[in-house]
Structure formats: C-alpha cells, structure tokens
Image (tube, rainbow, N blue to C red; front, side):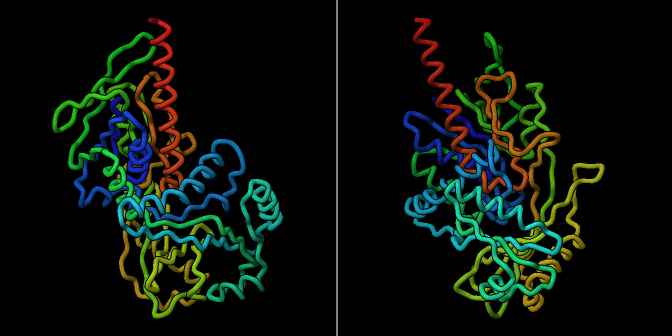
Length: 380
C-alpha cells in the first residue's frame, strides 16, 4: 500500500516516521522546498518547541487526548530518534514554569492540579517564597506565584524535524524535496471520491492514501476537489539572546512562560524569547512588526530583569496555519473523499501535537484498510 505525504514540516515528518514502522507500507514525502531550506518559511521555524501539555487548561475530550498522547510519545521518541540518527536533539526535561500575576485566581490552578493528579501527572503551585528561592531570576512585584509542571518539555523544532526525516529514511521512507505537488484530482467511486494519483513537477505519482500536511498550502492542494480547507496565516517572531551568566540557578533551567511570552533556555547561556502573534490585516501578506517583537522582549525583561543585559544574537519569523471558524488542528478525512486525509491547521501547537497527529493518521489508515479488506472478503 502506497502512502503519499504532502508537506514536511514537523507534522509531516512525524507522520512519515510513525508510518515508516508499519509493515508493507511504502511512504513517499513531498515538499516543494529543497533540503537546505524547506524549514525556512514554515510554521516549524516559527515555533519555540514549548510543549505545554499538562500545564494547559485542556482537561478532557479530544484536546486533552491529543496532548496526553504527545506527552507520552515524546518520552519514547527522543531516545529512539537519537539512537537511530546518532544526533543529539535538544530536549529540555526540566519542565515548564507558568507565572501567575495579580488578579489571577489561583483556585483554578488548584483545581487543575487535582485533576492532573488524578490523571497521573504532577502539577505544583508555588507561592512567591518558593518561586524566589527556586528561580531568583524572576523579580516582578506583580507576580504572585507560579505553576510548575515537571512533566512538560521543550524541544528544538528544527533538530526534531531533521531527526524525524533521517529516522524515517532509515526505515525506507522516500523524501522528494524541491518537488511541487499540483492541486489534487480524483475519480468518483460508489459513495465517495477517490484520488488515485497526484501531479507533480516530476510527473504523476500514484497512491492509495494521500495525507495533506502542507499547512498554509493545504487549501491550494484541495482546491480542485471543491473542498475548502480554510487555513490562514498568523505570523510569529522570536529572538535569541545571549548572557554572560545563566539566568538564576544554572542547574535548573525550565522554560518560563507568562502572559503568553516564553523564555526558553537553549544552552551556552543563550535563550529564545517569543513569540509574537500577528494577524493579517485585509490581506494574506503579513510583514513582521518590529514594535511587537520589541514589546515581547520588554515583557520578558519585566519578568527577568537580567535579560536587559543580554545581547541579541538573531531574530526570525514564520507563519503559523490557523483554521478559520473552527478549532485547531484539522485531523480528519477530507469530506467526500475516501483516501485523502488532512493533518493541518495546528496553529501554535504543531510541535506539541505532532506525535499525536502521527498516531491519529496511522490509526485512520490502518483501520480503514482493515475495513476495506473485510468488505472485499465479504464480496468474494
């Protein structure tokens, strides 16, 4: 059985790796960007890799199940990927610290901590004394405490994606970079439409399953199928800064978040700070707003004043795919089509939900293939 994946950001790469371990599957991945730059303009590049699962307010239903699956999958994935590829993937296991501010109701966090405890995940509520003792770099009179999640993580999105690609190759997945896939075409079946091939700049490619994980390019790919996948861009900017000394205790360096601003330790006394959330105005084109990036930096300094002494090493931006009029992400069959799956529109949670998305796509393909085999057997 042939599976074609279109799009190789972190989600597409995760799906390729997950499917690479399924017997009798031939998996091919296409991305229009060449290997040296295919991450350069994607949402993967915009991400800081802060995996806010346990500390999120999602406690039930699909939203929590996806997070729980990813949290558990990452703990197995990282050592697997490092062993397979002989690469080190920066993976911060020191948790996530979420700052609490004046006016915030800590009883809601207490309720969440109780729920997480029942689910098997620790969540700690720190008062100001505990916060000052453990993270002395945080100095702001409006901060009244913090919530610490020791089971949440942070991962380098680019290193992760490249490792997923290499590991999937190890298991036989074929990657075709620098190849553009044209809008999908289809044939009509008994009940649903069926896509048998895609047209690319290197000719036609046949497949039994087509997985669209192209982020902002998803709607273009499905345009000829008369199905709108309304995913719109939201720009994110971030920067990397360097200090002479680590913030606080050099042996305890969790990712810190407050008012939707992240301070992410990335080694060698360097930190990522971000990210902005910039929506388009009357157009699909978004230009990075320097004032918004400066504002994010100033907020980070207000939490950790020592950041005012930091030297900015670089800044960057990327576009996140946000579904219009529905929750993110979109993980489902394309309506009316029997073999086209969507894995797109993850907005700000592509890295967090990549493992769970890969598992979901795996289950869709395998369960549907089993149904097909059963139907065929009954007909015969």
